[in-house]
Length: 138
Image (tube, rainbow, N blue to C red):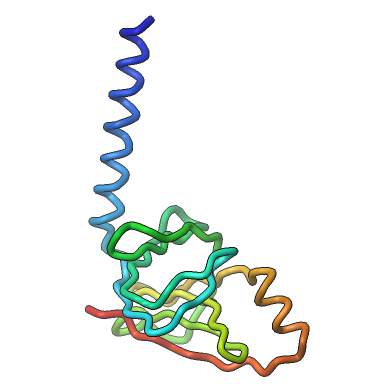
């Protein structure tokens, strides 16, 4: 029984390392320096350098250099033309920034994030929404 548990632990460890390696070598990963704190899903993340990558068809993975961050659900949206560099689109209500869209460099599709409850509340208040766009580093 202990031998089976050890094999299972070794297998899960190998799987975890392989998943981490794939995430770090993801060519769809964007590196963006974000100069303000922002909300993603139910989390507020501080200003800093972030890496954004696809994690499956409906999920984005957003992490900082210390691998702190979150996963968030998103859906595909169509754009007008391919981007020369990736970009992140934020909606701003007052001093609050909400990550809204992620656009990569390949293709004409991006990902739209679902609105968080905090963003819905700001929108419901009638606060003016502004758009901020940050280009990803190459």
